[in-house]
Length: 337
Image 1 (cartoon, rainbow, N blue to C red):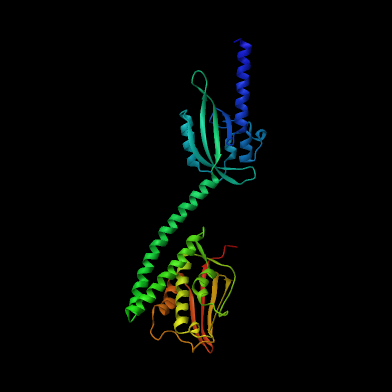
Image 2: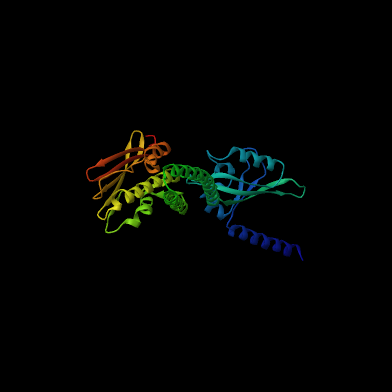
C-alpha cells in the first residue's frame, strides 16, 4: 500500500470515528492534559453534550469543564477525581453539574487518559451520562424502605397497645375477639392505602370511606371536604379514631338506628401556628346520644391517643339531635414569609 493509500485509509477511519462519536447518545468531551487552572481546556464536544448541558460546542470549546459546576457540586467528589487523574489513571465517578438554564443534573462520567508514544498524557476523554432520574428513583426507593422499617416498628408497637387496651376493656372473649379483630382489620386497610400510594400517604376521604361506605344505605352517610393527603404517621392514628367512631355509631349511635345519619365535614385552617385539619363527626336522627357507659378503648383513643400521638384537639358534645365530635389536627408549620 502506498503512502497516499495509507493516508487515505487513516482519513476514512478518522471520519468514521468522528461520525460514531457524533452519533453516540452519551456526551463526550475531549480536553487538554493540564489539570491546573485555567486548564484543562475543552477541545471537542459532541452533539450529545449539547443535548445534555444546553451548551453548543462553540460555547464550551476553550473553557474548562469546571464551568459546568455550581454551588451544590460535591467538592470531595472533585478532589477524588483530581487525585486519580494526577496519577494518570482512568476515573469513574459522579458529580452534580448545571445546565445552561441553571437546572442541576447528576452526571456519571468515565475519564480516560490519551497517551503519546512516550506514555505521556496528552488529552483526557470524558464520557458523560445523565443519571439524574436513576439516582432520584434510587433515593425514593431508599426513602420508602426507611419509611417501611419505621412504619413496621410503629405498627408492632400499636398492635401491642391495641391488644392490651382491648383486653382491659372487654368483658368476654367474644367481645375481645370482635373488637380486636375489627381494629386490626382497620389498621390493615389503612396500611394498604398508604402502600398503594408512591408518596406513602393516604387520602382523608379514603380513610373515611374505608370505614363508612359499607353502611351508606339510602344516603345516610354524608362526606364533605377538600382533597387532603395524610402522611402515615397521621393516617394511622386518624384511621383508628374513625374506626372507633364508626363502631360506636353502630353499637350505640346513629348507624344502629334505621333513620340515623352520619355527616362528616372537614376543612383546612391556617393560623400563625400553622396549618390544621378541622373535622366534625356529627350523628343525628338516631337514639339519644351517648358514648359507651364504661370508658373503653375508643373513648381513651379519642381523648388520649389522638392528643398524645398527633397533638390533636378533641371536643365531644352531646347535641340535642345526636353526638358531635370536633377534632383539630396540626398538619405542619406554615413556610416562613
